[in-house]
Amino acid sequence: MASDLDFSPPEVPEPTFLENLLRYGLFLGAIFQLICVLAIIVPIPKSYEAEAELSEPRSAEVTRKPKTTVPSVNKRPKKETKKKR
Image 1 (tube, rainbow, N blue to C red):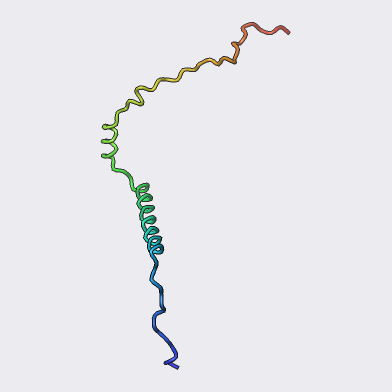
Image 2: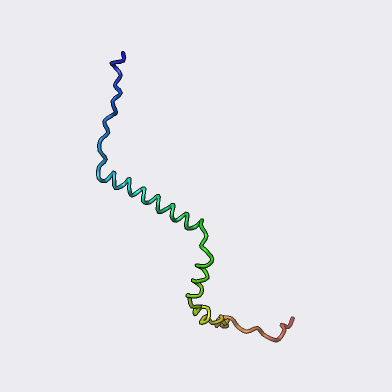
């Protein structure tokens, strides 16, 4: 009875090149996702934000012109006289 049991490891074929490529590609994708999630969760130090603001010119805010309302061509000016009933 004890001689009937075979405890040798099962034969597993060697993974092919595509299987290895898929395996390591999935690992790299998981690591990239973890880095992206950590970049969202971990706050940026205040010193970096201050340096970025000083080095960045604010020319976009300076050159921005206030919007002026242009009267529409289709609209007629209101009549100043009252309607007679």
